[in-house]
Image 1 (cartoon, rainbow, N blue to C red):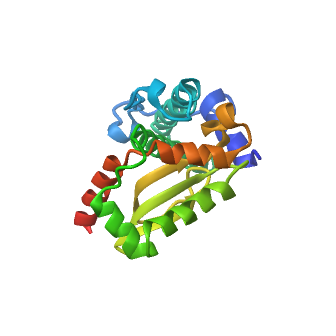
Image 2: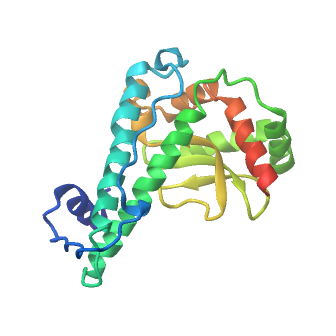
Length: 233
């Protein structure tokens, strides 16, 4: 369901006519937070070689949903560069909400694509150890992760295995609307449960998509992330 805030943000970012944007005064500086120069990263695997996820779906997901978030983030950053002390508060809050949404969408999509393209089998020792410590067994973690994904079927959100920097261990979390995410965590395995991630191939069957997702997990990439954040903790 589209909210009033999303309608406002969309008109600000995409329409450009809802609120007149103030002009930056001459001589003002513009740091790299306002460059609006983000570029979509290419798919890190051959889209023809995924098991159970079609080339058509994954390319559409990448080129439309992910690249669209990157494009909108650039527009938001450019609009924020025009903010002055006289900018209405609702304009600032709307743009900042959009910035968070599109930034997280960009990051989560990049991590999602990066943890695909594998054989779904080669679970690294660091990941295995972390999952056993947190959930008793990898099988139990997978059961719960799949249950979270299934619960989001027909709706929207992400199922994420995070390195929880507060707990200093792995934990599974739900993230909705690209914004409701763990405050102090690093994503290790990201599963997109928005319908655009599977409807073209599986219609409303989120379960079949989840089965296909697990067949394509790039576990060495997940293990690399576990090593990185495990050391950082």
